[in-house]
Image (cartoon, rainbow, N blue to C red; front, side, top):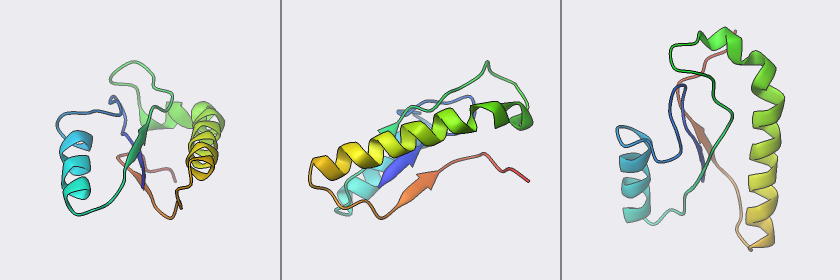
Length: 84
């Protein structure tokens, strides 16, 4: 599973991502957290739209890397960004 952190966070976010990954690992899942572009804390979600292409590129790079390593990628988990 590729795990994408939420706004104002990072791939080892102690309150959400880290415990989530621990539980998944204990259940037998492989997780791969990635860093996506972030803005300063408190920025509105709509200001992230110009960064979507960069985030897409990082997700695609993670998928390609994991495939080369022999993993089957079938799940993407992301947190806290809803775009209308």
